[in-house]
Length: 249
Image (cartoon, rainbow, N blue to C red):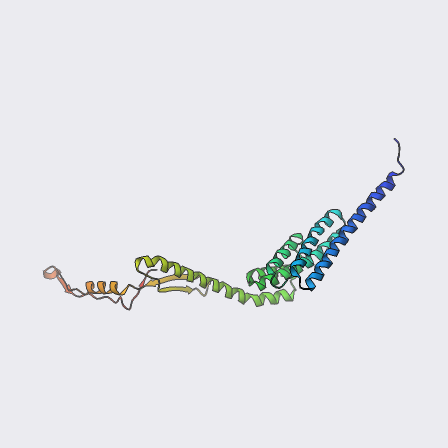
């Protein structure tokens, strides 16, 4: 078998070519990141986000070209750090980018923190608390997460109560709409909260209309004379309909 003494040299050249290609890809991704930082610093948020998105794409290229863990880690870190910036008024975008970063690294606490901040700005208190609890799972001594959970807890509860009230209001409107076809309305729609379970029991009281009440009252106040002898009954009947509403539940 003929041995080509130039083979080792050719292999070295190929390795150098790939190393150069990998280095160029990394540098290009870094340049895009720096441009994104510049745009972000000057308040050009839309343009900055476009650059960060491009940096994310280049990160995938680097991942395929560069097999060395330290370089992949560096790429992930700077792309994640910039893609998840919480831009004023762009909180939904920040949540998307942080979620994308967490798909790459579910334990990346900075992404969890940024996403929690964005959720709080949008008053997604439950989601923000969930991210902070995840941070505590990764770092039980994280004081910021503990403080945030304590602070957002009452806000989350207040929002839940508000949503329940809105739901009850919609149910009342629906009830009035349906009962209106029968000349009735839900005037005394009541919800009582169980202090032990936090659940609600819902009932409504329906008062009869004035004309309907007069008719029933006149009928019940008529003198009644039934039969003769010991089984005879004579008297008047009255109703307290004016003060005693009918509880339907």
